[in-house]
Image (cartoon, rainbow, N blue to C red; front, side, top):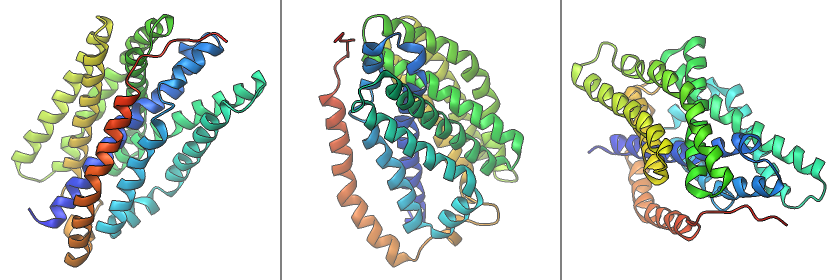
Length: 313
């Protein structure tokens, strides 16, 4: 495998990890007002992502950093073309982080309400805009961007509701299951509209083999999404979360498969790549550092694996 192909696959993997992990973070942040009826339940809901949300953001930093190092022309073209939405995404991430960090440090209920609003807005903006950015990158139209944004937003809501059902007990868990079904009413039709267009966008004028592979990934992603809803309704929370996570991962695979070998209009991966020496050095750094990062994050999820209950103070 050529280093350009290898690093494109690595970047796709990093973005996929970000979409899967931050996807439920965004969903949880948006669902707090729906799932929590009092302060104890709000702490319970936010506690599901409390130990992991900042670690999940590292996937974005790593993905963008890898793009900068391995494909500087792709990095520059994408970030400059979507300057405003990416600025809004970063603003949302900052507001969300401030809300999560300061919520436990303020005493008055009104101050906590402002923090909750910051978490909600800071979760909704990236959840919508990332879908809009990548859909516009593929199709180049405002309609596609809107469909992609609605799809990613509803998918994050569904993924977050399933995660809360997995991580909590009591009334919050029951509400999370109902919220997952409601979110699915939007996410499933949006998935059909969004994922069905991914192979067409990336394989226009190309050979039929990649198109069939992309169609397969998109169809399995939609099936996994539907299975996640059914499993949630039946109380199989672990399997439901695995299904929604698999749906996001497969959708991301179809997305980056559509972007290969031209991640930007008129720019191929080979043209966007750094020199062989740079890619070689990056490969050694990645092979040494990535296992430690993955191992640490897996360990952190294992440590905080237990369900949370609402503790009334």
